[in-house]
Image 1 (cartoon, rainbow, N blue to C red):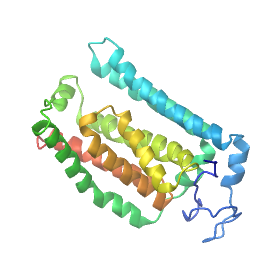
Image 2 (cartoon, rainbow, N blue to C red):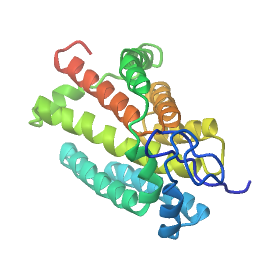
Image 3 (tube, rainbow, N blue to C red):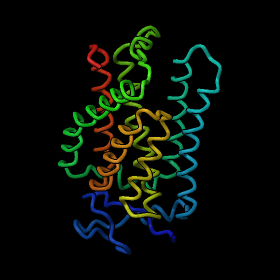
Image 4 (tube, rainbow, N blue to C red):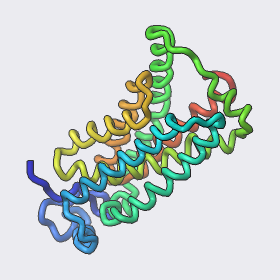
Length: 252
């Protein structure tokens, strides 16, 4: 299969660029993304390889945490969060031309509304996934919140490390860099699914696979339809925050 130009969007109105167009067909804004891509000197093939390399680097940092024989699990976890943040920001700079559209575009507000409205659904799917893992598969229950509290985590710190950081960094990596480059070789719906699978496998949580896949597909759809990364970030952030709050008050 040959490469085509990565799927990108007008930075003004979020409309997907028509093939070969020099200006947006909806608002008339000159196409600056194409010139920016040329300035990076990164071909379609090299860009895809770079995006895949980002995925495997992130996967490697997570696998490393299992290989490290450390009694202080949370110290390792905090280190991984810092390392992954730095890695993704470096890759984002390298792929900055790919991110011009999705970062400059706010997207239609209806997609922000869909993101917010979908949170109860994603939380319900996550809860159902957890229930099935424990009651149908026989997975053991882990008091993750209790372990965090014992380790000195406060609610604001949990919201930072379990909600804000994953929402921003994971969406930047998956619905930003990876989606843009995978969509250069397959159709948008296929790119949504491929990136969602990568997102799911990165978490190394087989028993949470159904929920993670649903969240990844929905965030990818929002990225595609809105032309912006922000609705997916909102969905991811609010979902994680609601789960943390439910755990904190003892409902989860």
